[in-house]
Length: 266
Picture 1 (tube, rainbow, N blue to C red):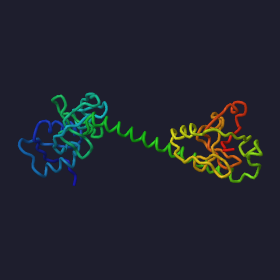
Picture 2: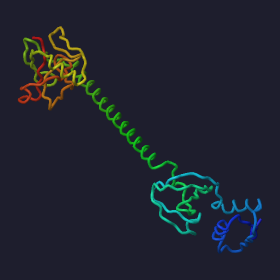
Picture 3: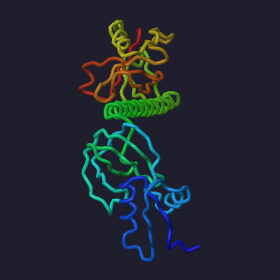
Picture 4: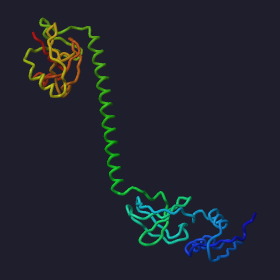
């Protein structure tokens, strides 16, 4: 059926004005504007033909997310516009099925894209943004820690493999200086209580003990002194006596950065 002539009644002049603007210049269309309420059939035709002018009524406070334009007509190209700053509070009075919102702003009816509005206040959005930032930072910190832990574990495994596979000379009271898997090795016998205290302060709570061959141990590792610039305190290093943990340093480190001084009871 060709709908060249159809009957429409309007509830108010604003509705009539919008329809007139929308169909202005349309060839062959003939509207008869009559007073009174709109017949159901005509109302149905209006909603189908002009869905952008059909709004579901509501009364809700919303905010403009960022600076945007409001129009005084549902079709932006037919109306005048006004620029509205972000975070401006307005009243939402209706929504269409085409994504257009009807608003009350400064005592006048305006229209805007629903996507430019939010029902969250600036304070709530700021709080949520801060929480999201904190969550992202915490996740990034956790990721870096896990990555660092994985690197440390890989380094430990590599060092352990080097230590267990060592088949060269082993440091002993009679062989006071040897060339071990990590370089020159010597030994020293001093009170380790201060060194152990420092390691405790770093979070290492492994027991201190003396192995049967005289090596001073911290947990499963031989205690060694090294150049902190090359091997930081707490790092693992292969020695001829097994896997070592750097706990101390000494004057030798400046002259021979790769040298290890192993703590023993000899």
